[in-house]
View 1 (cartoon, rainbow, N blue to C red):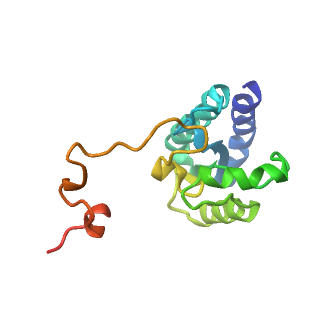
View 2: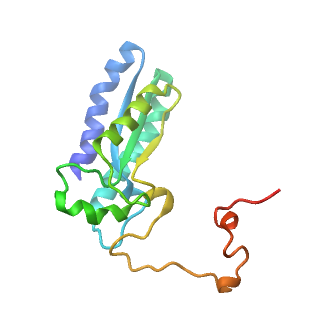
Length: 170
């Protein structure tokens, strides 16, 4: 836990004075989408706690440092194909994301480059997790089952693609 929190604090503390002297800068933190949505069967409370502090620091520092033209953002990662994961385990981890695939390092690089090139973006947490945070998808090991509407198939809009997508005509 100390590694995650201390690295954010001390690296930022060291970098900010130089950024202030040069008239601005950009800090990008790395966090995890487990902060937003824990998974049953994936013990990650310490990672969520420490990376959650990173998310809070990202937003707080974005406001504190904005007057110095220092932007602060974060990338929040899902399953990314790195040496952290055994290669044979990745196939089973695809279902952790609605896109049904694991991310690649290139996906993270693209997100970082977007944040770096976007001068009006600060305080942003960019999720590179295949839609996991947006969709709250049930994942392997979750014992939850989708809830059905009490009226079953007679629920308003049941079977309608536009109702399912939240779209209305007119």
